[in-house]
Image (cartoon, rainbow, N blue to C red; front, top):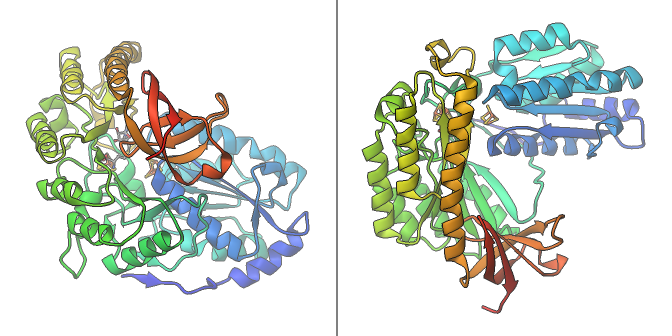
Length: 464
Ligand code: SAH
Ligand code: SF4
Ligand code: F3S
């Protein structure tokens, strides 16, 4: 069931009053730290919207905050360890300023053992809530403040929530969630357990938010979902992701549409055809393959094989000869042999990805793969990892060299500290460093690539 909120949210007025009296300064301050993927970043922007509506301003320093929120990620063990370390460090702040309210939310908290550990070992954490409870933030803060109770709220199965306020971090790049959750249950992955089942937003709600961003001058709008290509499941209107893209692309304006993540089992020829015919979608796609070996793919429950993946790549190239691909890869899945890993290497060489996000397998409690025998040592996996990076670096270096002399229109993102140069992103997703003025940040600029070190591109400004 969909829920549409109109502002103010329930309890937000009460919390605003209470927090005004608890604040150490003249205005209540909030510190939000987000880990993990863009989905979490988008959730963080919604929670900022809710807090802003309650009169909060934001600080980058936890010591200055009256409300501290950690928005966590559970995808790999390393991510979780960091969160526990950083949440632990908040104990001192709470000791110094007992009125500070501390909350932990996001994917980690949806796991029973994590919630239990927070309850037992982190008594200074006031609120723990899961990924589907964002809209109840004012209510939870009210209970924690007015009733002086610790609040634990997980496992909410809300439908699609519309109408929450959003405070966007950037004025040129915006996120639009098209679907949440995941039904795929890849055997290594915790996401379906912590994000719940797939839910698609209605196309008219997506179009409305998208149009607002275009009207506000956003230049790059990224459509988000764990598996955007299965968009449309469960909606009363019959619509798929390719059709949604077609509708959005028909909106006039000077902007780029990106989207992530695409699961190869659901990526269709129609999707690539829409991309080829579009006005706003750059010819690049993030298409995680995870492994190049059929036995490992089957054990991973990915529901495609190497040939299906490669045939998608061939089709995409036939309709967009200039398309570039990025991908995610897992090394050292339980039971993977060196020979099987070499199939991953050969796939990388065959496709020539522009960029790869490479991960060593990390067991996640409650997933199927965590129960599988995993005889290869971490040390051995680290060696494979290094081998893969060497192969990818060579590909990146070749790709970088082939860019020299090309004219590229980039969207300027920021000024890079180290070089003092502007950093702009090409349609294909690469960063070009070039000299320019601060007023160009958030705008498009034309550059000519003059230098490449790996995929580190440098350029000079040129006219169109
Ligand atoms: N929905 C996206 C991926 C989300 S998680 C998709 O299916 O493409 C982002 C990436 O983290 C995954 O693509 C995978 O490469 C990696 N990942 C997920 N679980 C992992 C685990 N247990 N160990 C190592 N890497 C993992
Ligand atoms: Fe995880 Fe697979 Fe779902 Fe991606 S598609 S979020 S890897 S279960
Ligand atoms: Fe992490 Fe949750 Fe995203 S586990 S990768 S923040 S969906």
